[in-house]
Image 1 (cartoon, rainbow, N blue to C red):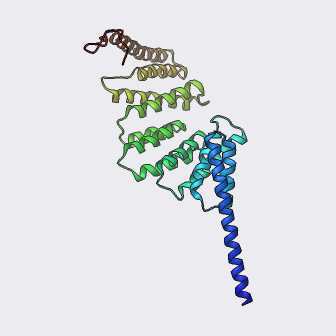
Image 2 (tube, rainbow, N blue to C red):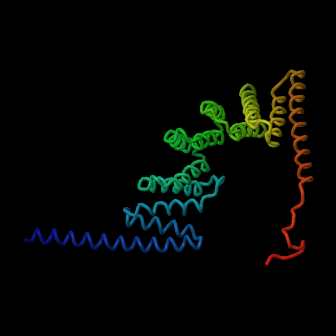
Length: 285
């Protein structure tokens, strides 16, 4: 009898304490939601985390922890505190996805946070998993290639674009522009690597131009011009340098002609015709 009473008392006490903790957790979550609405993200983060400590079963609240931390995160700030916000957001989104794996929007936030916080390898891995699950949907392949290009893995990005037979010129355009930017702003110290980077950029932009067909983009022509001028920097033969400048000038002329044609087209566009019965200066009802 005494043992049974003790067991009953222990169970009762556990239920009461458990109920109290869940009640306290709900109070934290309620305050946290109010803080978030008021854009007091630091206080919101604190209360969401406190609530989860009291009630770990409220796993869907990890989503709110992630968004609160993400609201505090500032891309480009390398301070330990700021990196901590990114790490908190990443961990929270991952915790949430264990119970809501179908929430694609949170998965996208997780990937973008990984990319922004210089954890690009993890982001690319997730994108590759998505692409493997949707082999016939080109947008998933495109996302992998774009992430690789942004991470500076240009050779891999180009190889994947070729392997997936993409016909989207923007993919090759992104690779080429990234190659130009790296060559212009932060070139490899090794000349051969620098030359290979430029050649990849030229190949990518010319592929983009090929896919654009008879409607080339002004931006594509502009960057091909610029990257051919980068090639002059890694060439010691003065005759080849002149060939590269000539090539760049050809693309520059095409860009200028296209710009002039666009301006002329804009200038010859007919003025809007007033609707029947409306006077030019009439105000809407």
